[in-house]
Image (cartoon, rainbow, N blue to C red):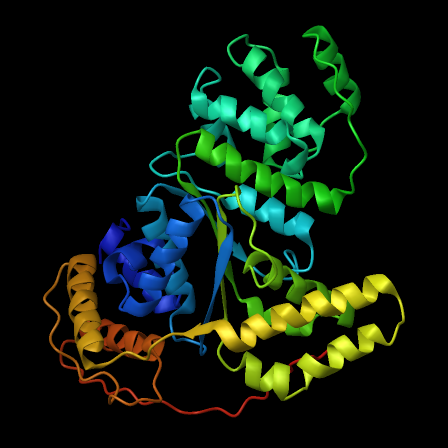
Length: 401
């Protein structure tokens, strides 16, 4: 066994663990052609300055996370900044502050290592027409952005090449950190630019920051920003208000409400394909949740009920289902993984039977069976493994809270 982890070994270990690492995604690619075509259309709309989103559905082990990584690679190679957000207890979909922080922290710039916002700031040219348009659009009343974003742009243009430490504070603010309003006013006074800095809630500021950063990205020469959300089905575990806010976020991102123009940002949500059946209809969520909110008799609850219903309707009606692997796709994956195993362990692996091909098997099961069988033969060349699958009855605790 090789002592160092080559890219091929890294890919094999990732596939063995069911983790969609970049090395594994590079090696296998994806056969979800229809979804790729739809995603390419989304990239075009985002590059044109219109928000939008897609909803992907697939069973456990069907390759949703792998596909998201693949779409991220496609977007990156097309000149987009890409973020990956895994919905979890630490990053609940109903919390725009935590979602924004994770999206900004995980963002990657094409062919540029390191923190994304720092790289984007370094690429900004304050003397360029793109930057001038950004300043004008950010400062307009129709932008929907707090004046502090326009103020930081003006200060950035004045101070970028001065070595002033406040430039770093501006970039940190764009990245999600707080910015001292007192110091911001002081810096504006020094350059003779009066600004009225208003109060804005942290939630609204987080949403505005993402819209601003999307514009910042294009001013730096990139085509837009794509945010990929995984494990979205976990929203079913939230409280009533948490679920309602999460569905409303789906509606907002996926233009089930009104798509925003002039904001080059798009999103892809991946969740289990049984969510509409098991949650929206099986638990009658699509009817009960709005009714419970409307019963509170408050305008804000009624508005949230309407937005949540839009999000649930989008999940129900617009989910794109991953196609199960056909024989051609299985043959292609088998050949690539066999070559990876050969390079990873410096040997010539024989053909293995793997699992019998069946419409009930997931791609992850086929991959694990092939790798396990080659591992065993590599350890003992006389061994002849044969894999089987066993179904385990498990009840998903949808809406457990």
